[in-house]
Length: 254
Image: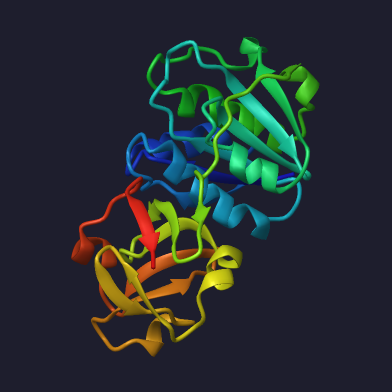
């Protein structure tokens, strides 16, 4: 396996150090950036980004994911094996939705610190996770990296309530277009509402449409995004800015 993805909240500069480490260990690795603009310390937003794209990568891909407000503390560094993929990062739930979507998870606590060399207390993305990801991509077996463990931190996208006249959930991600992505799945939304029906969300009435271009320019709309969740958008605009909505805000569809 030679393919490695990176998902972090590091912004610029720091991901380059991770790539340098990876290529120093496995010069043949192909590195794909999923995102380095996850909102800082927003573990669930990082989990959603990873969850959204992992199904489109081939088996044997190594996914290095680091949104790690607990860096340097007692939280464990882990590798998750699931569905032929490998996930490397902190044990804070970040990788669980993506890994569990692929099937049975086997979790390894990283214990072979001889593979790491000097480890900064504040940059495990470079000194731990990038290195372990590179060794995995170069064919190192998991048994040489760590030991199996049962316990891990769970994370999901929250609870959705489906009632007779409304659905409630919460915002789990705001993308670069300003689209507000909720944890309400298409299957739940389509049980209650039909396309072209008017719905009320965030104190605004808007149409529930199949795609952005069916709304007028500047108009709010609700739709099912390509990720399979309900989102609130503005045709050629930012719904998040217009509505002043952020991750973890509650949402109610009526």
